Each structure stands twice: as structure tokens, then as C-alpha cells.
Picture 1 (tube, rainbow, N blue to C red):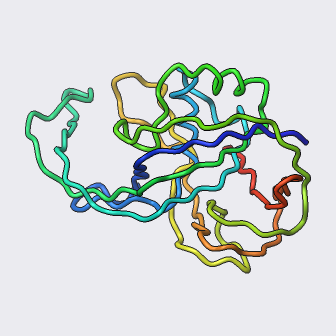
Picture 2: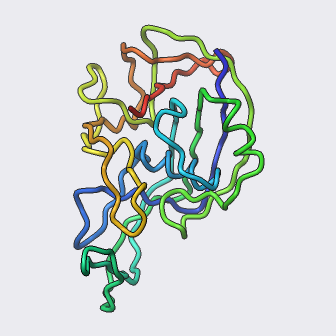
Picture 3: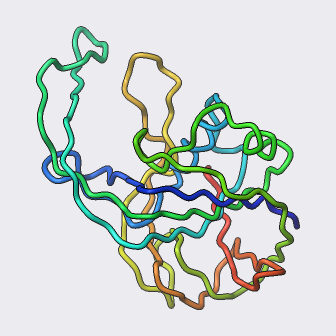
Length: 218
């Protein structure tokens, strides 16, 4: 099968963990699938629905550090989301020199989006600016086993080690003026080191010889 492959690079990336909203803000070492879906929506200039494409990726960075930032908070007032006038200072973790190799199976829809993006790509927050380095179509073959790294796999995944994270697959933003609804939460393994695994939805890239996992957001 053919997949659309694009590479995005940046100076910084921040992937917030949903269970840590107070105190020091920690970043996931890998982008959640909800973040990648949001990235695609930003580039398309519209809401990208979870069923529109399978998502595979390989992510890497050179390290992480912490920064201080001003926090603007929100509150519920008379059933609507309003800005909280109080300000605060928070410590936030960020990843350094990120690189995201993204693979999508809906080539017809997303190649025009990547070639003519509606907005500047961001790897996390609006200040985590990124740029598209390449766009190409690659051949991929479904396999029963192979080596994989730099991606999130559904937990549990035998023969792979990595941080276990509870993350959303996607968010529902249909209600204007209200907080987002979580579409689905799952447990994932953040596989950073190479691991030889067996599972469904595993594909070997013909030219590179490496494998990717294609995740279905529904």
C-alpha cells in the first residue's frame, strides 16, 4: 500500500500530559495521537475527524529542558467558559530540536493540505513553531513482526519497554464556547528505544526497511 510521508522539524515541542495541569508542566516524550490530529486540523484549517485517516509516526528529539511562562486561566461562569483575570507563573518542560516523521493512509485528502497548509505547523503549543521539510509517497507492506521505535503503542505491548501513559485518542470540539470533550482515553507505551515486536497494523517501509505502527483513531 502507499502512504503519505512528511517530515516536520522545529526548535521546540511540548506535548502536555492530561493528568498534570498544576505545578510543573511535564511533556510527554512522544506526541499523543490527539496532538497529531490537532496538527492536521491546524494545517487543514478545519476540524479533522478521527475517522479520516490512520496515523503512523516516528518522533525524536535531542533532549528536554524547562522554561517559565505566564499562565492565562479559564473559568466557568453562568455555564460558559470565560477568561480568569488572575495571572500566574508556571514551570513548563519542553523538548529540544524535535523531528516528526508522519505517515498517513488518506493521501488524496492530506497531500494538498501539506502542500498548501492553511496555518503554520506547531508541535504542541502555538510557540512550538515547526516547518515541513519533505512530502513524498512511500510503499509499505503489512507484516506480522518488525522493529519499531519513537512511537506510541497500545498498552500492553509484549517485548517492548517504555513509559506507560494514559492519553486521549482525540477530542470533540463541536460545542463552541465550552471545554472540549474527550473522545476516548487509552493506555499507551512510549517506545523510545528500538524494539522487535509482533502486532496487528504493523507496516514495513519498503525503501527504509523500518517498521511503523498505523493507529486508528476510533
